[in-house]
Amino acid sequence: MFLAYTAVGRRWALVAGAAVTTGALLTGCSGGSSSSGSASSDTINYALPANFTPNWILPVGTASHLNTNNSSISQAVWEPLIAYDGSTGKVGWNKDNSLATDAKFAADSKSVTITLGDRHWSDGKQITSRDVEFWFSLVKANKEDWASFSPGKAPDNWTSFKTIDDTHFTITFDKAYNQEWMLANELSMIRPMPQHVWDKTGDSGAVSDLDRTAAGAKKVWTYLNNAAKKISGYATDPLWKTVSGPYTIKSFSTAGKVELTANAKYDGGGKANIKNVNLLPFTTADAEANALRAGTVDYGYINATDLSQESSFKAKGYSVKPWTGWAITYMPYNFNNPTMGPVFKQLYARQAIQMSVDQATLSKVVFNGTAVPTYGPIPQGQDSSFVSPEQKTNPYPFDTAKAKKLLTDHGWTEQAGTMVCTSPGTGDSQCGAGVDKGTKFEMQVLSQSGSTVTDNMMSALQSSFAKTGITFSIKTAPVNSVLSQSGQCTAGESSCTWQLSFFGTAGSWYFPAYPSGDSLFATGGGSNFGSYSNAEVDKLITETTTSSSNEAVQKYSAALAKDLPVIWLPEPDYQISVVKDGLGGFAQDSLANFHPAMWKWTK
Image 1 (cartoon, rainbow, N blue to C red):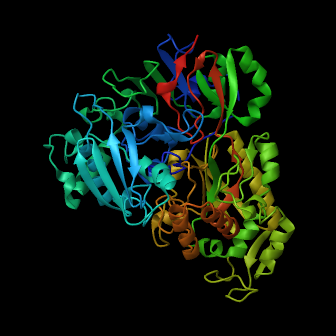
Image 2: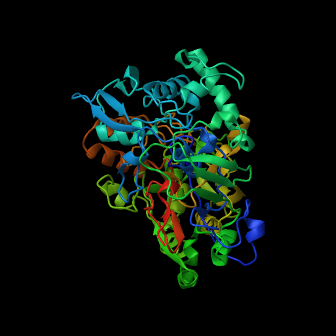
Image 3: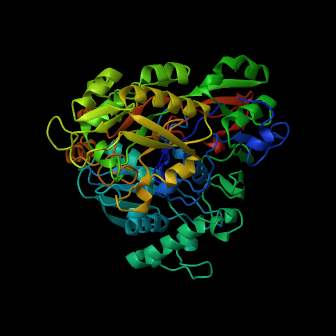
């Protein structure tokens, strides 16, 4: 995303893609760049994924800011308590870029005691348990606004925070949890924040212990979120000057160009290897590809359709590396849309839609073989023990004739190429509850712009849906706009006009190591954009977080492969990276973060 999300929420939510023309660099790059790549060995020019403009800095995300670039930048400035990522090539705890050095679970798995390292904020103050408590208190009091929140999960299931001393604290849970899930999916979300600077309600306000009451925590939350909306002030506002990470913000434009510079006061293990990092936004994938051809960036992306030109990039001094993500790709339904929501709530209708999606051909033709089909809620691009046999074997193979028959068997009649409900009611051969007579099977997607691949996929879907008698119209917008217009809503709200949303050009949702679905598909989940709700699925999701066996995750996988909470779509490689020869020191993180502190010039 997040996202999607991410979704901000989880750092693994929502991402972007790419495509090729000439002479588009100056008009395509929002922030501009130097004429010949980085100017020296202490600088790198990094081309952000096309049309994926950074727009958030606060280390606590909201749903409309589920952009992985936001999170990657934020984590380079304020390090996580526990950096759980794939930065070394294998997903796990990256202790070099974490503020915690140890996490000891109680024998009954009902609590964890965490040890902080001997670390300091850039203003010289020690990072203490109080800074963790500050984050904890703000999230507790404002959980509904936190994109990572899912009812019953963090912070609901964290019943107490107890400070032992400046570098030790204990978080108690409401019951025993799977320790791997708790570490990778919940504790990794904690972002210690400078309480001695941020615990106030206005720029000129005095810092105190406001966060220790719910009312005070709400006021502080409002202040910080309002400040974070002022993008033009990220580099100058004193609020953002006190950091813990390897970088600080040198500049941050509203167009998305970001300059990071090394934090001279950083005392962690993940010190920046390159002093200056220029993050350059591009409005189209074509423009980004042109910048790479011109040699004006050191690290960027091309689309899968450009892989045939790999030799030309190599000739210009680049290596080309597919970046596989731990992700799923999908198109959320808005189950509360007043027009199509009642249709989407009918399982047979979702089955007909899914059977009209030719994932195998889309993967081969549109993505040039760099995508894999998605048949359920668990990533399928990498082998794992989490995927159920039901998901692997695809419960709803592509078959538009069968899809059309499903609709006609349930009270729909094709008229002028579009299915129309002619037999309303709740009987087996009728359209279903809430579907009025005369309802046309017409659905519209709001899809992210800037990617030829996405445009091609949407056109292909339009054609295959038409064979079933489903009219599919397409609107496009930048991904941040798509996310802001695709939130949870109720039928009577003006914001509930969206029907389908797509923000997954490079994958819709990037998971932490343990792929549970509490944020995505649990009732009320913070990134459950379309308001999907199934009580049985909620139970299965709860089991995935408490059971130490993979059987629970497989049951969840099977259930959602069959129930279709979203339209499953091919999962592409996150990006096709194009990296200047001599730039190394890093692995492509399958959780979709980039880690600028690891980058270094090796020659």
